[in-house]
Each structure stands twice: as C-alpha cells, then as structure tokens.
Amino acid sequence: MRQCQEWQRKLYDAGWAGISWPEAHGGRGGTAAQARIFAREQAFFEVDTGVFAVGIAMVGPTLMTRGTSEQQERYLRPLLRGDEVWCQLFSEPGAGSDLAGLRTRAERDGDEWVVNGQKVWSSGAHHSDLGILLARTDPDAPKHRGITYFVLDVRSPGVEIRPLRQINGVAHFNEVFLTDVRIPHANVVGDVDGGWAVAHTTLANERNLIGGGTAIGFRDFLRLAQGVGGTDDPILRQRLAAAFMRFEVIKYLGLRVQAGARRGGAPGPESSVLKLAVSRHVALNGDLALALEGPAGALLHDDAPYGGFWQQQFLGQWGVRIGGGTDEVQRNVIGERVLGLPAEPRPDKTVPFRELVES
Ligand SMILES: Cc1cc2nc3c(=O)[nH]c(=O)nc-3n(C[C@H](O)[C@H](O)[C@H](O)COP(=O)(O)OP(=O)(O)OC[C@H]3O[C@@H](n4cnc5c(N)ncnc54)[C@H](O)[C@@H]3O)c2cc1C
Image (cartoon, rainbow, N blue to C red; front, side, top):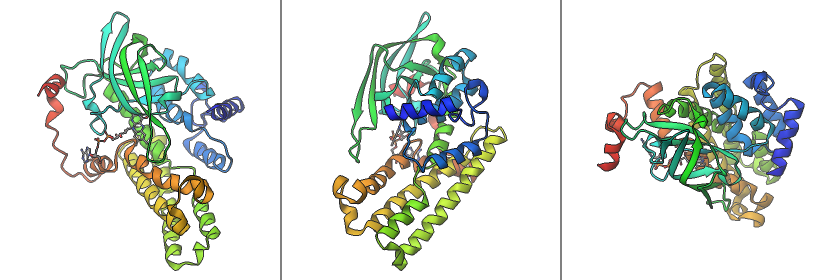
C-alpha cells in the first residue's frame, strides 16, 4: 500500500500520472493510447498502482463528466497524486447483477443525508479513504429512478468495514455496514434520484478497466513454457499459439474501445464485448499455466513453482468473470444491444420500488 502510494506520487510529480487526463485536473492531456503504452512499459518493472485503479479508472472519469466544479477541484488532484484511495460501494447482498434493486436508504436531513444499509464485495474498502456510494432516495419511484450517487468519507462515524476472505486466501474485498452515516448534500454527484445515469458512467469505465486485462503478457507464458520444456510438446504448443492469438485479439478489441472513446462517445456495448473476451481469456490462461506446470500445478503457495504465482492467476479467474458484471450479464448486453435480440422481460421496471419490496 505504502509503496503503491509512493510510486503514484512519483508518477504525479514527474507528470506521468493521468496521462489521458486533462491538464486542468492534474493530468498530461495525452491520449488513451499513450496511457496504454505507458502502462505496458510500466508492467516490465516491479511497481504497482493497483490500489488506485478504482479511483483513476472509474471515479476520475465519472467526476470529470458528472461532478460539480467544486467536486472536481476537491477530489481529482488528490486522487491522481495518490493522497486518497477510493472504493466502490455499489453491490449489496440482494443487488449485484440487478444493481438497481439496491436497498441501502438515504434520507435527507437539512444539508445532510442519513444513510442506512449494507454493501458487499467492496474491493479495497479496508484501505480506502473515500467511496462512491449508491443509495435509494425515493422508494416510491421505479427502481432505476429513485437512486442517488454520493461521495462517502469512508472514515465517517457509522461505517463498519469487515474484510471477506476469498478462494485464493487473500482478503481483497469487504462487507460494509452503514448505520446512520451522515453525508453532506454537497457530496451528491449528479441529480438527486438521478444516480443511475451517473452509475452508468462508472460501470462502463469499470468494464473497460477489467477489459484492460492484467499486467501478464504472452511473454510470461512463453517464459513459463520454456522453463518447463513445454515448447516441445505439440499439444501445449497449440495452446500457446491459441493464447498468443487471444492476446492479439484482445489488444485490438481494446484499441477499438479506445477509438470509440476518442470519438467522444460514452463507452457502449463494445466494452461488454471486451470484458467478456478478457474474462474468457483469463480463464483459459489459468488452465494453460497449470497445464504447463504439470503435476506441480496442483501445489499451492510456497510449495508451488514461482511461489504459487500461477495458482493465484488460476484462482483469480472467477473474480474477473464475476466482478464488473458477470459473463452472463455481458452476454445479455451483447444479445440485446449488438445482435438486436429480444430484450429480457423486465416487468419490474415501471413498478414503484416500494411495491417490489413489499410484494
Ligand atoms: C473480484 C470482485 C471484485 C468486486 N468488487 C466490487 C466493488 O469494489 N464494489 C462493488 O460494489 N461490487 C464489487 N463486486 C461485486 C460484483 O459487481 C458482483 O459480484 C456482480 O455484479 C454480480 O453480482 P452478484 O455477486 O450479486 O451475483 P448475482 O447477481 O446474484 O448473480 C448470480 C448468478 O446469476 C446470474 N445472473 C444474474 N442475473 C442474470 C440475468 N439477468 N441473466 C442471466 N444470468 C443472470 C449471474 O451471471 C450469476 O451467475 C466485485 C465482485 C468481484 C468478484
């Protein structure tokens, strides 16, 4: 965490943080392609900016397009400088794929909002300073229309954070309980009850973030294969060739999404195509890595080759396939918005949320 922050600060001071961000917000005013090239080069060194991913890739673009000038002034530079870490407080025990079904309530009290509810799967909340939070502010409106988007100081009284341990042994995400938490009205992003549109901006950027893939490249698989003699095995050679092609296809899908962004459009269904392709790619890569390691692939942690690095990649695949919208949900988006298939029946879309909860 500290090393991450120090590196982010160094990047900021040298003008390399936020390469594609406007100069007015502390960025370099460059292009997304330049940012990608820098990220690829950075991946060759043992430096990490992962804790800032939510902030830089999701919160930044949302505040730049949807925030007030006061919010932009207050939050964007500290974020880029690495002073403040952000988390995303959207999902709830009963609201993941159906995020608009969220039940956390926010009620207005003068210049403040009082929030009660529970969030879950909140990545990095335990080391965050600030969070983007969705809460229901009008239960009498249909479910997508009565939601407001807030900035929450995670250290506020009434916020309780409990880490959750995952399949790979790491406690990456958390349950977050909110009890009479007070948020100033100035922290509303966008319109009151208009948070769904703001959330869309965040979620599309999240898909692009996950679609950006991991720092692992084909060269890492080749090195692993050469180390275990896998390049002599005809079946493994075929799988390596297929992996190479996937890496290339995903590179071009990423460029396509970037080109769309350069034309000024909000990320569209192509980000679902990218996200789905990456999640499939990560799953196949996990299988390939363990196949290359052979029987030793069944070991874990320090007993395994490379300290269990590839086992972590294998076990991490489910996170990529679920987080930021599951594979099935991406398929729904592609089916409806790319292929023009009939829409999923959504009879609850026009019903007041209160009636859905009571029924
Ligand atoms: C690694 C990771 C990090 C995460 N980080 C965060 C975070 O920081 N902040 C945050 O708010 N959330 C976070 N999440 C939560 C994530 O957004 C949700 O897990 C995700 O949206 C799925 O919701 P769910 O877990 O409630 O599953 P559910 O929505 O209950 O889905 C269960 C199953 O039903 C399927 N399903 C659901 N609806 C449909 C449908 N309409 N059509 C077809 N199939 C369907 C799903 O594909 C899935 O297989 C994270 C998740 C992971 C795995």
